[in-house]
Length: 159
Image (cartoon, rainbow, N blue to C red; front, side, top):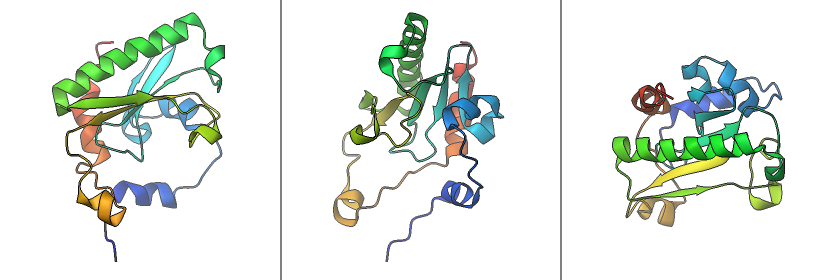
């Protein structure tokens, strides 16, 4: 039997699903509720509610679009600016050994939410693939999302 403590998952499981786009609604919520690190006029940065690792961030345009080719030059530039800032902040706070950065465009490519384009930034550490996922198909996230938000949010306030 596998027992993993992940208290934030109960909130998601028990919450009513309203069918609204998380990337459209999260920036409108209080930071703690929406896991919002930054919400600008063009793009936003939120914590992934189901992270691969601590500090797993999602950057998306404010405008609802699923197609990369529909991004305006301003949206593309703003998302890249936020990506660079996020990497800098994550290096300072979590000191990862590397990053996975990318997009899953479309359901077939692995997008869990394919109706709103978004970029993943996943901090990685040498050896972060330990025996738990290899032998037990279990991933342990060592820090609660609200603690991660508390650490990272002040570093996005100057944007």
